[in-house]
Each structure stands twice: as C-alpha cells, then as structure tokens.
Image: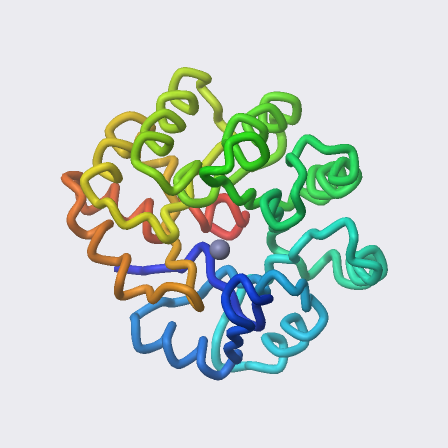
Amino acid sequence: MKIIDGHIHIGKWSDVFLNYESTVEEAVKVMTSSGIESAVCMTGNLNENEKLFSGINSRKDYKFHFACFINPDDEGLDDFLDKNIDNISVFKFHPSFQKRRITDDTYRKYIEMAEAHRIPVIVHCGRWKEIASYEYPLEIARRIPGLNVILAHLGGDQPSICVECAKAVSDGGYKNVFLGTESVREFYFVNEVVKIAGADKLIFGSDYNLGLPKMYIPIIESLRISAEEKELIFSGNILRVLGIG
Ligand SMILES: [Zn+2]
C-alpha cells in the first residue's frame, strides 16, 4: 500500500525538546526503511525554513513536500515566501509555540496568501484549548471554504478532544477540513474518529523526528475499515489535498 507521511519534522528544536536536531540524511533513511514514498516536511520550532528548503531540494533521491513554518515574528519569512512561494506545498502554523490563536491578526495575511495560492495549511491543535483549540481553525475553515485546513494531532492529541473534534467536523459538514493522525497513540479512539468523521477526512502522519512512522503505521493498519479506506488515510487524502492525487 502506498504510504505518504503527511507530517514530519527535520531540523532543530528549542529547549522544549532539549535542542534535539536531525538531518535530511537521517530522514531519508527512516522514511525509506519505513516504506514511506514521500513526506510532507517542516522544520522544528526554530523556523529554519531556508536551511530545510535547500537541504531537501538538493536530494534527488527522495521526494519531500515542503511545508513552510509560518511564524509572523520571523523577520526573514516574507522574503522567503516571496522567493519560493511556487515551491511551497503547505503552510504550517503552530499557535502554541507562538502563543496566539490561529485567528490572531498577525496570521491573517499568511492565511490569505495560502488561499490565493491554493496552499493547504496544517494547524497545530493541542490540549491548550484557550490558544490551540481545534475550534479556531474551524472558524477559519468556515470563513474560507476554498482553503484546505488540516487539524494536526486529530484536533488535540487527547481522546476526548479528538472525538469531540471529529463530531464538530462531521456536524459542520466541512468539505475543506482534514484530521492529521500524527503522534496520536490511543488507537481505539482513532477508530472512533474514523467512524464519526469518515476515512476521507484522515491523513496519516508520524510526527518524525519526534516519532517514527513504524510507531504509527500499525494504528492505521488496525482500523476496522476497508483496505480502500486505509489507502485514503495513508495516501489518497493527502495527495488530493496537495493537488497531485
Ligand atoms: Zn509536529
């Protein structure tokens, strides 16, 4: 079965992850040995877009889809986007690291840019509900139906939040919202999520360099759904969202 990893990191983290760092070379090895055909990759939280972008573009032996880390406080960001927008596959937003909701004014122009260039966005969703609740990216998705929005960590990386989020996505009838499975460990609840939201909404991710694809592939494999539905989660949905499926 074709597997695309919809969410990996390459590069360096701040002290939240003890300044841990990984290379493109290591990522290629892990992805290849895990049977991953291509991967959507972003930096760690130090926003080293330029370094990652040139690092993956110099690899001709593996396909990465570049996700630009959007930190409005990054002084080099606008220039970088100006130069490279046509080669950016995804915008990644991390409200928790930047301590502001995705609906914050400082994100607005980047969301508009994503819409204008038909670039999907991944929004980190977490347990810090005041800042990183799935409800804020859903607000954006309602406001901009043409923008594809992937809610990372199934909307919050905690079974009760993931199930709640799946219900909100299903009840709202969103055509432009997807749920990334990266780093969600509680496999039973992934089944609940897929039952509520539908297999056409989920996108497989490992959150490498923090997780490994082989830690999370079995969760999708164990879902009580058809092989065709698993294929959607492993590759079909992300390819469609990237506009290459
Ligand atoms: Zn991540």
